[in-house]
Length: 80
Length: 139
Image (cartoon, rainbow over all chains, first blue to last red; front, side):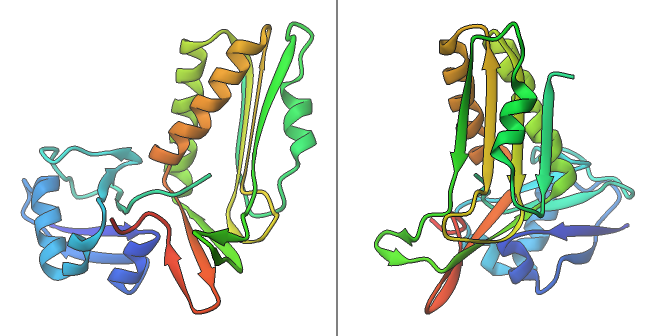
């Protein structure tokens, strides 16, 4: 399945845009997605940390990704 | 409604936050105002740029406010956060908390600002004379 990933902050600079598309297997987990992203964008590994959000909630590594999910990469936040 | 949560691209109005949380049963209001500092570790900052994942940020703000209501006897909470370009001295965030007694207002307000800095998907970039940096991105 093809999923769209929203990017913010430094992730937008790393991806070179505010969204990217990735191809995942149907039962892919957050962990699989992170592996793929880090392979394609090695600079992600240099971040202090980053999270993946699914449908506006922080996701865990073992969570499964579904085709119509709204997925976002959340680099270290710095609001306030 | 006991919360007023907003993400705004225009100048924040501190008085509006205070007026909104003011209520007859409250004996005090604690207000935190974040302001853009002119330097980071001695290096002059020209301006800041804030960006939000707005839908999720509103949801996370709401979670923090609800937790504050669970932890302390507070009546009303206003959280306003700016996005866009901010000059030195401008206000990125205002938090106002009204409670019957001051201890709850102080503690809840402190909890809200500390937690939002850890969980709410908003990012700031510092612009220096010789470059720019996304704050906290790298170890």
